[in-house]
Image 1 (cartoon, rainbow, N blue to C red):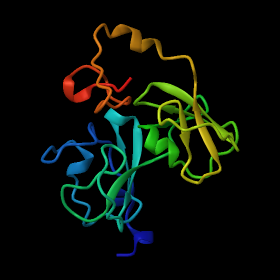
Image 2: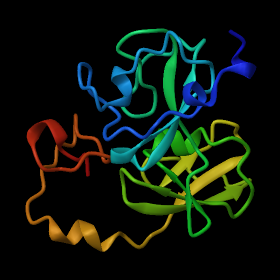
Image 3: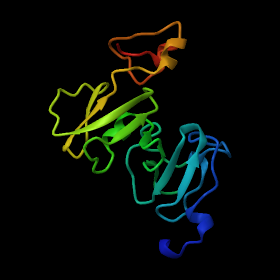
Image 4: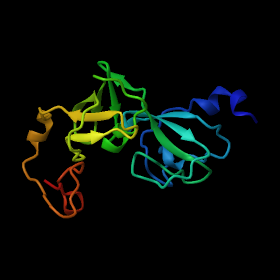
Length: 180
């Protein structure tokens, strides 16, 4: 079957409650992609994002950015067309950096750090991966809004690990400590 004539039920899938979960009938990762055409789309409720199936991809799985199906070929990757108030919504900073051809002044909200970012064409600041991120097209940089989300203030205890921590973690348990 040609991908161009695939029935809509195979191209636009019903929403899934979760993105990840092998053996979980309500996760996108658990869908068998064998019969699905390249470019199939599905909403993942827990990620607030639309994912597209890249059927020829064999990229290494990477959290919520590159998801290997439980069975069948390809990879699920977030489709960056979900917007809120004119800002694109992405799962993490790696996905932000991979946005195609951002224009000067474009805005994106990054869920993992709960922050708004703005794209600056030609910016040459030192990237640190948490407040300044290069775009993969090397045309500029994403700059994080200096005002943190108030939601961070509701967490009383923080786990910090300067060696193995990750600033996109929640900082709640040893396996999820922040770096700074």
